[in-house]
Image (cartoon, rainbow, N blue to C red; front, side, top):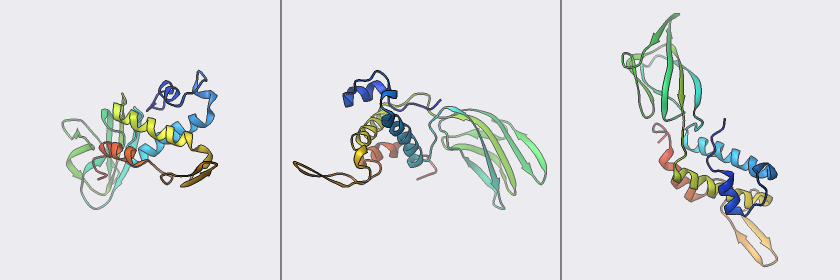
Length: 183
């Protein structure tokens, strides 16, 4: 299931859409999904609250901080560390703790591999993130016929628009959701 940053009902009300479901507007559905991807790329986080497995290879420097992309972390199913062919399973509170950025290991790992299975992501969409998605999706949907154009000429004159990308207000809102280790 992909998290829905903004409901079709909200988009329908803002854009005065008449179809009962989003499937009546295929381009809107594509834009809504792509905006979620753009938000995840900008923030360095994954929003879907699903189980994930992350594998990281650690070289000669001891690593204590493990950055995980789906925040907040709701549970850690397993942490397996392999060094020189020897595998060990780590346990929460004995070997690591969950933090705002991922995991903090109590002892550093070097020259090895760590495999983490965890569940993380947004279970509810905060109001400001919903607003950011509403603004960005509406902007992109209304200008879908001129993708990438910064100036559009019409019978009544011309209109200048922001360049293709996230709106400045949307970026301002998303800055609050950037991954803590991404700053």
